[in-house]
Amino acid sequence: MNAIRKRPISSRITIALVVAALLIIAVIQLPQQKAAAQEGQNLPWNELSLGAVTGPAGTLFYFDGTAGDSVSIEVNGISGFIPSIFLLDANKAPLAQELNAANTSAAILNATLFNTGLYYVQINGVNNSVGQFTILLKRGLPPGIPLPLDIETQGLLAPSLPVVYYDFQLNPTGPTQLEVRSMTEGYSPLVTVLDPNGEVVATLTSTHLVGVTLEFGPGEGTYKLAVDLGEFAEPVEFSALFSNVIPDSETPPTSNPPQTGPSTTQEANDGSSTICRITPDGDGANVRAGGSTEHDTVGFLAGGQYAQAIGYNPANGSWYEIILPNNVRGWIASFVVTTTGPCNTLSVTTYPAVGSSGGSSGGSGSPTATRTPTATGSPESTDEPDDPTATQPSGPTATYTPSYTPTTPPPPPTAPPDTTSLPPLNIPLDETASATDYVSYPNGDTQDKISWNVTGMNPNVALPGGRARLVITATCFGTGTEYITFFTTGQTYSCGQTIVDREVTYDSRTGLVTIDAIGGSGTYVQWVLTATATRLN
Image (cartoon, rainbow, N blue to C red; front, side):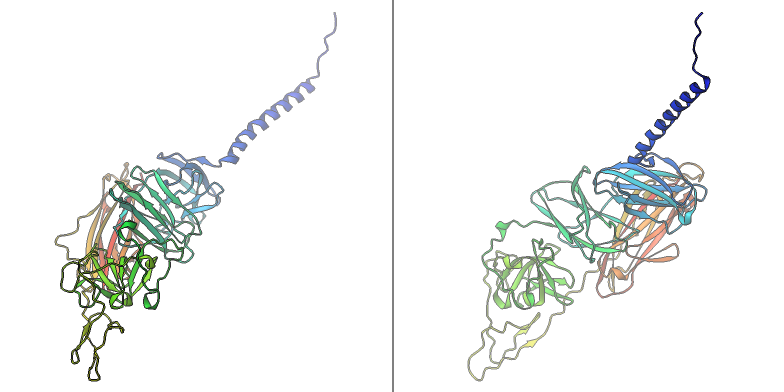
């Protein structure tokens, strides 16, 4: 019998160990290679996930986002854990953060995504605390603040309110344009516009732009504008103006107004302004039915406000035809205003004769370029001295002694008193709601009171919907916003601040906010309260 040669047992064991080791290395390397592309835990949309922070490095999640998405990241600590939230781009560069300075167990970060691709969410514990938490990623846009037509709106962005949303309606019969401008040096507005279906119309993220103008064709439905704070860590101010586009055929250029003297045109910094803006010097100026001080006053343009000029007439020292924010047309003297934009392209228009009705362009009256005072007469002016080139009487005995009796300008707008109590601000659980009204000072309605109520809460705090985080922010628009205060839960706040950020239950779901206009001259402010109630269980 032939002997069978067997491999030594030690050799077989060695080969088996080598094969096993190679298999283990392969199994380990595959997940590591995948994690290198997408580190952390996948964060699904609209599904509650559980996580834990075990050290200073925190916990990392990732998700895929689309440009124009408005995202809300809600984190609720368990057993006293206090979370902070960081939103990072695909390179882990910070985009937004919620440091949770209030040290509450619930934290919410809202942001707008400006690129399509991978994003990371990092959860840390405040003061290096550790513990468990739940996290929820939601997509959706909150209700926007109505953006009025032809009235410039000023907004404020801050770390506590990093994104502001506005709603505006397109003109179904003509083009409109939207202008967004930075009012803070170094800040470039990050702008996203969405159509009524939530589709992104435009996304602008260039850090070199101080403003942008978008033009829309005729359309219908509610569009949404989102202005984002971006990487700015300090509060910034911006302005938004939504207006109709006046066709060129309505104002064909026929001559150019002068570009010297007090009304020298100041071009916009980026050269993109497409309208001539008229801003009165000082506290404001009268707007008249025609281009002279003898025409009736039809309105008043306050200092700091502006109107669009649609025409020009060189008579009587030169006057601009303008459209006031209330759509009233009138004339304002060039020597009491400052202009911005392409005012040198305005066409020469006519205005009605003194005493005739109407103040819009196209009137049948002809302007009177000169006025001849009598030897003993004393012409009166209600705006500024007469044009020095006006015809003077002949003869050595003629005496011309102007007597200026300025007309008292109409009072600034005042908020009408509320005939009834303001309706409560009802905030459905897991939704956003807003309320708005006006206050003014020293006249008019100087105080508003509004109650808030979180609806849909469970009376049993231990059951789902029994606990919620309530966040209410205050936004102001108008003249004298620095004189507006918000008093609630024993504290006083200012415009642009978060006035409520706390946990509520069924028993503490209501409250009251008192809004006061406390000073200023001609203060007239629209306040907006925006509230979100997010369930904690």
